[in-house]
Length: 162
Image (cartoon, rainbow, N blue to C red; front, side, top):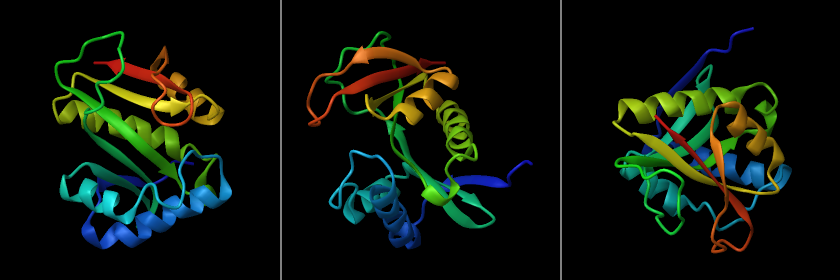
């Protein structure tokens, strides 16, 4: 069954709903996030900068992710990108996990990054987040090894060049 999923930029009026989605994931699934991250303030900044996307199913937000210019250049990457974008804080409602929502979101984010002129994507994922790692590799992202330890946990660096 094909799901009617719609990707759009998050709006200011979505802040509370997005924050609650993150908090629900923190309570019910594995994550490195906590009550203070991601904050409502960060969500608001991402919305203001037009870098936060929501995925809706029948008008309800079921997933969210940051997609924007990549700012964290602390890591050495396999490929140097001229206009690299980053993906961060991908979140799928626990009520909708296991239905391909995350994979659909990722596919749509890749297309959106290309449409915005990116030449590739970089992002980090905690080494313990096995389901996310499987999804990223299935989507064609390359694991570029362990990143520099600056988040308080070990993470892999993933990238895709367009």
